[in-house]
Image 1 (cartoon, rainbow, N blue to C red):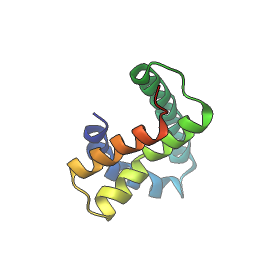
Image 2 (image 1 turned 90 degrees about the vertical axis):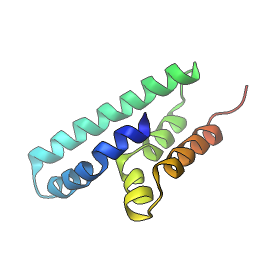
Image 3 (image 1 turned 45 degrees about the vertical axis):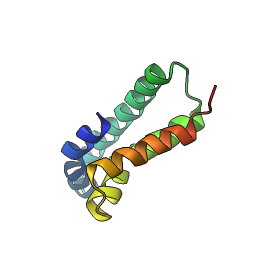
Length: 99
């Protein structure tokens, strides 16, 4: 699901970042959107993992699952959909202790 979302939004997000640099209203919109994404990241992962995330885990997941990281890996580096999805699965496994 994350891959589907990122495919649709990554280029738009880059455009918003460029516009936000020179427009206070767009920057406010970007900031609200990003905070919402952070909250959605917490809620989704806690539901999937069946436990609360600590602040360090949340910060790392929020960053790893960001539109910027998707853009770096897929748009800039050239990873395909399957490679991106595998990187995200690997990240989750590395950040969540077993047990």
